[in-house]
Every structure is written in C-alpha cells, then in structure tokens.
Length: 462
Ligand code: AMP
Image (cartoon, rainbow, N blue to C red; front, side):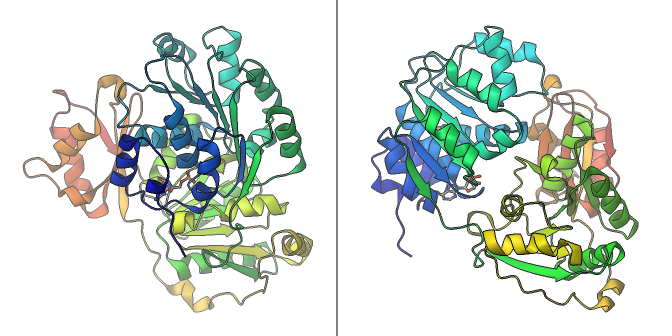
C-alpha cells in the first residue's frame, strides 16, 4: 500500500519534527483522509474505530491553528469518560511538546471542582473534558468558551448513549457559531446524524476501512450448550491463547464479578471492572491491568468505555452483546494501530438471533469453530509477568516516577528492566515490578527514601 507522509502536508516545521521524533512518519488511513479537510478549516465527521489515530488527526489540526500568544480557550475536546479524556490530553501534550507555553487542561467529573476552577483562573489554550463537568464550569462562570474556534466531539456515539445530549447542547450553545466542528464516532447511527445536522456546517464525511477487517482482527465464534460449558470454554480459550492481556466482556455487572471470581478460583489473575466499584478500586484495577500485573480484565461495556489500554491481545465476548454496534466497539479494543488482534465470542442456542444480527450488520465470517481440546485444562495457568507495589505517596507529596525508579534501581537495587509502568495519582503511586524482583523492590522502597522521606509500601496481592 502506498504511504502518505505527514511531510506531504504543509505543517509548521516544529510540529513536523516532533511527529517524526515520535515515530509518526506515515499517516494512518483516517489521518490521510481527514487531515487535508481539517487543515482547510472544514467541519469533518470521521467514522473510524478506536486506535485508528483519530486523536492525532484532530490534534494536528488544532495545533496548526492555535495562537499560543492569545491566552484564551481556543479548542474544546469533549469525551465520554475521564479515562478517554486523560488519554486524549496525554496525546495532545505529546504532540504539543515542541510548542512553547501551551497549556492543556483536563476537566472531568469525579475530580474535585475547586482545583479545576483554580487552574482555569490561570488560563488555558486547550480544554479536554467530559460534558457534565464542562457544563458545571459554564454554569458557575468558571469557564468561558467565547473564543473557541475548534470543537471536537470524540466518541460522539458514546456520549449520546451515556445521556450527555442535554449537556452537549448547553455547551455548544456557549461556543461561537463561527467555528470548526470535528465529530469522531465509531458508529454513525441516526441520532448522530441528526446532531451533526444541527451543529455542523456542510461536514465532509470520512470513513475508514471497516472495523470487521479480518486481516487485523481475527474473529472466532464458539457455540456452547449452557453456562457451565461457557465458563469451561472461557478457560480453554484463555489457556489456548495464553495472552498477556485479555479483555472479557460480560453483559451484566453481576456476571462480571462472578466470572472474575471463578477465574481467580482456577488460578488466573483476573480482575473485575464494573460500575459498582469505588473510583479508587477502579483506578487501581485499570493500573494493574495496564501494567501487566493482571492478564485478564472482565468488564461490562459501560465500565470499559473510553478504556484505553494499548496492546490488548484478545477480546472475549462471554455473551454476544445486545447489538451489533456494541460488538464492533468491543472487538475494536484489540488489533489497534496496525497490530493484530483476536476476538472470540461464545454463544448458546438462545443467542443465535444475536449472531444472526451480527451476520446482517457487521458481516464477519461467522462459522462456529470447535472449542480447544479439554486436555488443555491440565495446562499450567500462565502468571502475569509483573506485580504492583503501592506506595503511600503521590503527586501531592511531590513523588515523581524518576524518584521511584531511582530508589528501586539505586545501589544494590533491582535492574531497570525489572521495573514496569509507574503510575502516580494524587496521594499514591503504583509501580509494576517483575514478579521475581518483588521482595527486593519492597525492601528498597521501605528502607530507602523518596524525596528525602520514607513512605509506606505494600504489594497488591492477586
Ligand atoms: P487513537 O486512535 O487516537 O487512540 O490512536 C491510536 C494510537 O496510534 C496512539 O497510541 C497513537 O499514539 C498512535 N498513532 C497515531 N497516529 C500515528 C501515526 N501516524 N503513526 C504512528 N502511530 C500513530
């Protein structure tokens, strides 16, 4: 396939250099198709799956247009969830790192309001946030959008599904009509079309290769007789693929917890992610899955929204979802940005009608395959390669990743390659270390100092 390079666009040299230093030379399909229109100032509707490179597409457009010297909110990006907003803000900061003095702020629900209002007083160029919280700021007069010239709706379909229509309307009402509106959505149902008609002007439609492309995501379907066999089937698939990261989707919160508990019982490091978890447990679960301390995450669709974890090897549908769009979203979690993925779906006879729906709407090649042999159940369950240590100090205590890395790998410490991802929240830090290095790592942190003081540390048990 012919490649189109970023350098073929007329971008600011610094931005181009930065893209190249990040390893972004060739554009992804959504970028090739949408960027010329975005740069020309047109409204664009882009329908592409997660992992298509959509964030970079709108960010490059935003950065090209931004006037850093004019210290007002010029771009607003709305996302359905905090996780997605954080992910988007991270990508924007990465792409903007050669633009001096640019300020990107995230404003999401579930976080204290006061500090956000404080940051806003200092001003920002780009705001990324969730509709509910942005609306709150507008209502309380802590945010002004009268200088916004680019509005981005990311995962617009999800935002509508989550009931953000009213909040979106209230927000868009405060943005000048003379603006560029970019709408990204994995699917393009009727509701999105009507929103687009209301808020966009002559939008250009961009569609990238369909999500059921069997060359990037291999789809497999397995028929099971009942729920007992369903669980066995799940174990067989997990043992067969032995993947580092597997996302298992359930249709209900209760089932999510039950399946995670059962898997745990059989020796798998599986975590449940559903709406009943406290925010802190939810964050901890995501950190442990992303840093490879747990190889299996069992989640509901709601909980998995906006979840952006790179490199999910396998997605398993414990049940077929209620509609084809959800199926597309689920399997789109794997096979991202060019890597190959596997999606397995289990169904029983009374779910056949749902499979037929997929056949009609998604067009995968639905041929039921035999399950892996039962003898696999004797196989040793593969343990996650890492384990997570929790340190009772975070951003507020000024603990930084470099401090932790330094403490772990200092004199008589563990090897740098035994340290995995480090995640720092307000009052805590989580660091992944190789399982064989856990004891030494615990000792190094407990006996050593971070920022000149001692912090408590513990291993988060499987
Ligand atoms: P997104 O669809 O925005 O979630 O992007 C998926 C991933 O692809 C992100 O991790 C980006 O950093 C990466 N990415 C986006 N555009 C490019 C590109 N042109 N070349 C290489 N990687 C890219």
